[in-house]
View (spheres, each protein chain N blue to C red):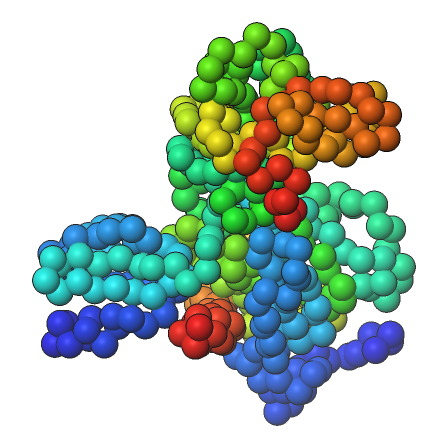
Length: 246
Length: 193
């Protein structure tokens, strides 16, 4: 798909990868994949492949970064050099530094930071393969990893993007739509509390289109949340049975 | 109707953010939080609805966050040592190894049940010790080794670094026959790390 296609949506309303406008890419979630992390999760969202790991709460190092009244969250979003078509330098780019901050701030409202003062948690997000919408997939995976670590949370955070390609508002954009499309609206949601923790937009939308995009992204988040729940329950049902057998 | 729904939930696995009831029905207990009068779970665990006492709690399935608490037994390595206190890098809380470390402080007055003149007779930098948390005010962990089963688990020779062996009241290095003093735990050299 190196040459630029003329139309991103065909006459039947199908997108380049054959999806309808309100259809998500296939999603696979797995919890507890890394032995050495306190909590971990793996997500395959379309062609995105992302690992998330959580360590802590533990003493901050260097110690002066810790705060006397709350837990500090550190987040590192990183893309592997082989995750994109052209080799990416492994050094953190401007974009990765910004995404680290954005992901951290979208997860912070879901945590009880005041419960563990003078400590910190470290969140590592490694993108192994990228195909658009990695920030949303990262948030979804990171939230699962935090829940897996047993850290008290207000709610899980699910994230999904919506946007506009050609003249249609669509949900869950992939790389090509993201680059050639008109606008992109990533959104993160705590579904039980119905609270939005991340809302960004780039591109141009009319107020009506924006509202439609937000609603579509929220619907997407709710679908993703159901899958997050399944992933956690699959792991913990197995553990529960083991405990009961003993 | 709502009673029926909550009875079905008791014993079931719940996830963070799952609604358990309202404060008019239950008193929220451990593993839950309240927002706008609604009780939610904040951890992954089994929901326990106590219909007699009208309490709802979530019992964690696997041990979650491990932060040292008062009366916990911890294992750590002695770091910076001064004549009257040492810093301990705690890497094990109870039975669980933690990722990263917490720093604890062991003062000479808490090192033994009798008077100790110098910290050099208790432990030395590099030793692995077992201690009990006696205070966690302001997240500064004060430790104590004043018990038979607390104290040095592995001591190392300050001259050659070899593992010391117990010899009556004292410790001896099997390599360079250097004699040192430690406040050892009753199961010296047996703890699996």
